[in-house]
Amino acid sequence: MSAIRVALYYLPAAEDPLWALGSAWLGWDSRRAISLPRPYPAVPARRAAGYGLHATIKAPMPLATPLDRLQEAARSFLHEQSPATLPPLQLSLDDGFLSLRLATTSPALQALADGCVLALDPFRLPYEPAELAARDRPDYSPRQRQQLADWGYPHVFADFVFHMTLSDRLPPENTWLREAQAYFGPSLALPRRLDSLALLVQEGPDQPFFCVEEIALGLTPK
Image (tube, rainbow, N blue to C red; front, side):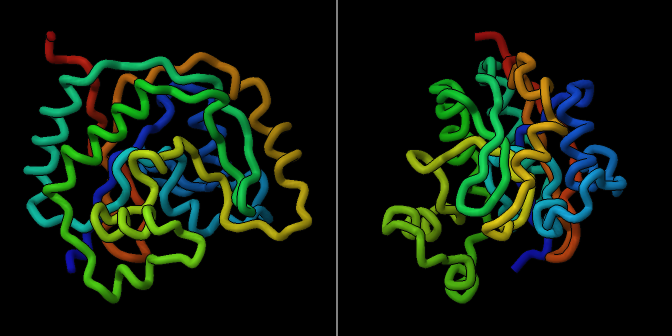
């Protein structure tokens, strides 16, 4: 199994206040590949920090091909996709995890995510049965369990949810949602365009993800 994993993520724009706030909250800036001092170090976020602030579009996957072949395919596909306006973000505490989610659904974003899963899956090295078993969870539905086997990730297609994770699992009694609302404040309501996606690489199981390329959408005339 390849030690390198690659993911396709949405990252807030570098000039978006949310990028600086969220990267500091987690303590990792994946664009610059640097650690940052955390404003709330007591928030459990060791696992979340390794991914940086992001929303998953194509989940981390071991590579079956050289990285440059994946990059070429990702550019070719994404250059033909249309940018989209994102609905406003809101904070959520769901199943013990603090995250940022969309206030309303976005059919354009759903279609883009579905297309990315299909376009990039030929470059994924499938997990061995033991690895699949380790990634399975009792709360997965039969459909999610099948998607884990078929696509290497359970939350695809009808189970896709755009979200940016801000914590590891929190204890039942916590005040972090209130703290996060005060911290992120007005930045959540700012208008946002999804006009690029980022390729991130993880070089080993205990290594953080870092950005290797940001690919613009809509460069190829239709």
